[in-house]
Length: 394
Image (cartoon, rainbow, N blue to C red; front, top):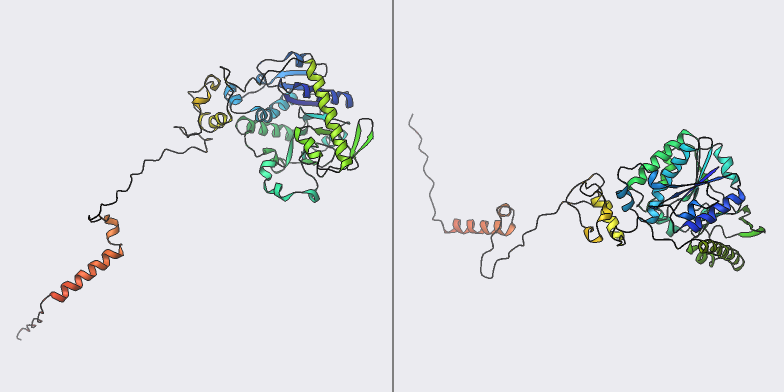
């Protein structure tokens, strides 16, 4: 098994914790880390838990990498780089049969034995956020496009032609469309054959599905069960501690202790590492942070502008959410500037209003006025006798 993950310099402590947990429970696994930075951090190169560290800028095959990095924020760029990283691992490690992607803020608590068994029968394995309809909140279901259906932080592929086709499709999406709130991973069961939906309650626990995986119990030192199944991995976010407070007191205490231990472990790793710099692709060349509105405007209006080769050399003042003066196939928000509409000049008091020609025959007041005038003319006309008809003599 090879586990791949995408990380930045700021996320490196949590990435080390994830890799250490994988090595602890699955010693034969290999860890490949793709770093989204302009230069490789020294801690990533010297980490004993990483089997290989690569710079993703050397793996991506998009036409213009400056435009690719500029259009996304940090999380969107991570989503866009997952497929290229897995494609790199798939092509390089030809002796491996199972490829797993784990988010950098995931920690493994027991071996992922289910993924190994599933990969022997199915080429693609994805995990749903929610697996029990009894705990479904229908207000969230209405906003399903924003909440997504499948977990993008947990994915398993086996060496199969369908998995290779899936990676190509996902890579093409990441070039331009990873900024969308809608997860294209939701379309996977429609477009590809033999996709397995993982419903094991011990995988991919996070704040969004904690309400249906509340029944946690400790089965040993550092091992737990969730809904009577072994706990495999948890995706840690700040919202997890808040969501744990909604559970029963005993269950909430267990989740809170797990979260506190994880936080202390990440902080302990961060103390040994130098202070991480901001994301390399989050600011302009002059040091100005790139605004979210500038990224959105560039993605919608300026990406296809051939005059812009490196947007990092510009500034926020250059980009604005107004439509640009060119059309592109991906510029859905483009609108041609409309001609200014002349203000209607109402006639001054005492003046007769001019009626357009196309309204003169259809305007009822004018028709009635003409009929009244004709009737008046007929009343005032003198009587005329009929002319006698002259019949020719025969």
